[in-house]
Image (cartoon, rainbow, N blue to C red; front, side, top):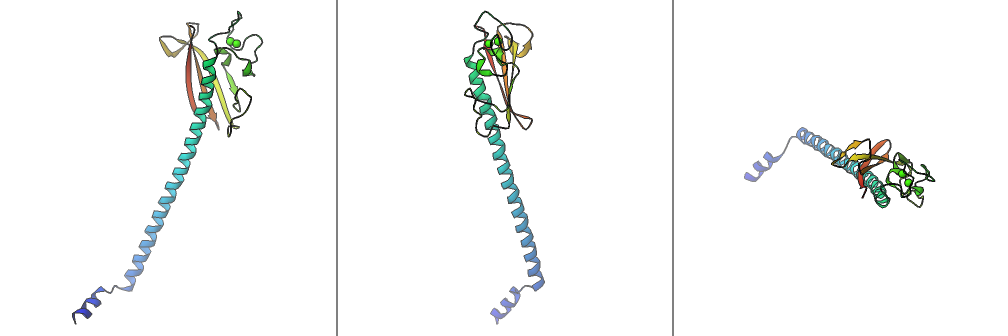
Length: 170
Ligand SMILES: [Ca+2]
Ligand SMILES: [Ca+2]
């Protein structure tokens, strides 16, 4: 007698069960959409990171190259930019820091004239300035013994990475 009464109380109306199922389906759908958005954001973030790393590598390679050249033209002929016998479009002829001023290459190439993998639609740009030895963030218009080169890696018109290097005349 007690058992039958208990069983009767546990039954739920049919309409309520359908409503529960509909709400559950809606919740599952919302969670699924949220999960897809998270996956999409993660994939997009990974792409952004890969692009940033590629840009930094392009910049770092050029900074390393700039470290190896002289502060100024080793010969007697001193000139801002490429000097006698050097070509502004052929950086393998450069041998001093300011030879690189306003140098733009698209796509970027290594010294063997090879384009790094997946960089065919990138641009690398270099600007060289004289700077104040006491505060290298200040560009100046005359020689005081310190030059600064700023290298940019550009993709789809956006500067993805940028860094500077200083060179002293010593
Ligand atoms: Ca030179
Ligand atoms: Ca020069």
